Length: 350
Image (cartoon, rainbow, N blue to C red; front, side, top):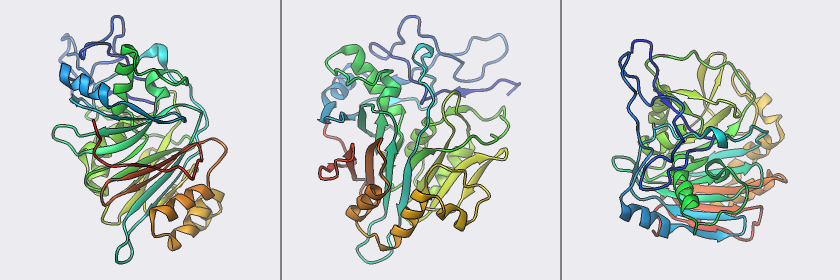
């Protein structure tokens, strides 16, 4: 590629607000060219979202507030480019200490359903459940921390056109989710490890945009790993992450970057320590990992999965989600209100 690199920028560093009809806002220039170009040629500009007036209207009309976390729901209409840069420097999100717990429960007996659970433990931000059905990709439902598109922890006002446009970009920033093929992905913070060397033939991609690419393009863990290997995942100023990936066949794997390479670890539990080079006894010594690992053999239903998440919840748990990999249903509890479960199907109502 003649030494040029392609870049796919993503959150958590917030996205740029495209204020009308898919056009970039004045002065909000992208940080890097989306694709390499011959020397001396201007890099082509790429739009993150492509929506007709009807698509915009349908997306807006689908936005609704589900509860007072606040938790929102949206069905995105139109198409989007999961490789287009949409960062906005002035709204860069600060780094901090994440603390999340994830598990995969494969189906082991007649009538069992494969389940993927996660607690998202972070700052008190509004959230949104996002439905997506991209052209040429797989439909999915995912959870998003809206701070990373809004740049504010205040509850948004979807009646404001600028806010609505920002909220539409949540489709590009999934923190966890499942697609129609039964592939589920979630992330957690991990201590910094030595990242692989950048390669000229791999585009850069942000740490949660890679989740969007996997949900759109992969049906199995192996396909998701192939997607990850096609990109250089970059974390910028934000915490380094590792990922739990699972599929409806019962396969699961942890992916993390350490020792200068992408490491794939066969496991079904993920918390916040580096797993590369560790043995099972070392992993179970970590409190939340140990509780999840010990509880999974007795779990069968989504209620069992939610009980496991309750067992490892922390003071700053923002949402707890259990995804059914058989039909894509998400069951979500916000702010540890365990008695109130939102059932969110794969297909949105918008």
